[in-house]
Length: 441
Image (cartoon, rainbow, N blue to C red; front, side, top):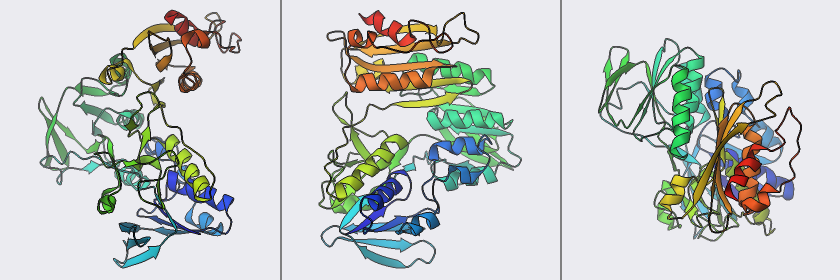
């Protein structure tokens, strides 16, 4: 059986590797329009900031390593057309311009995303960059000489991570966000704390401001909003992403309005023999019950492997997501899983929440730090529906505990009886999560 995979990063190469392990005789062709394969995109801000010193540290496997395993990889090859009735794809070699065709028994769409762009007046003049692929990180890093001041458009995950890393390099940072808070997927209290932390390390943050234009004055890019003008050396636009699925429109494949592909739980699309996985896909949200576009590397790696299992005939299902995420902001960790209270209201859920602040370990043990925790719950059933937290220590392990509890639909009563390990260097005798759940009962 011959499988073609379009896209060679998380979902695509997870699928290719798993498929080859399951069926050593499988013929696999991977077409990737970029020049890099199988890399850790989430590490790119830290590579730019010098925390990760070598680019090769981000690369899981090279083209040569995949080829040795019998996986045929074609870099700088863009798939421009899919013809499902013939089981054929059309590909453009981006180096030569030549158009070729290839046929498949099974096809996986794992094309990821492209960055949204403002396209405001002056865009072509600006010293403007995006961070979506490894080649983007490479480009930013190569152009940092002489950069003393940067404007970041957008206050989401990547915008905040880039801000921190620019500060690490001694660069002055301005974040321009049109919403009323940073981290709009979090509740407002979390966005306020992120703002406070960033301002304390010298980042200028402008909320409720809309970008109007760019201009060029000698070597400076002039960023104009509805409230101010800022001359900078570099601009990073970080205003979200959209699925790379335009080339599929003629197929009639079922998609959300934004182009995210709709699949079933086996990752099969609405077209026979075609699967989809990764950031170009809409997933079942286990709390809202709706399809959601939540592009994260965790989902991409899981669904890539599930596609491989189903191609060989194993009936493996992907249940869905609850949107667990985590990021570093200064010396703090911010994390979220399930729904925030603001999201719950948007979905017309009559949920409530409790907030607590507690120490990550026994207060008398040296080094204890405060953790803020918000739990969102259904007041009728006491089932926990969401958790958000920030703190300098002890957040990353606790958010994963909450993700499991939410996926298992645990009530606060059930959760409060969890048998957690205890020793003063690691937790108080009443863990902060248990304290929070007890506030619900």
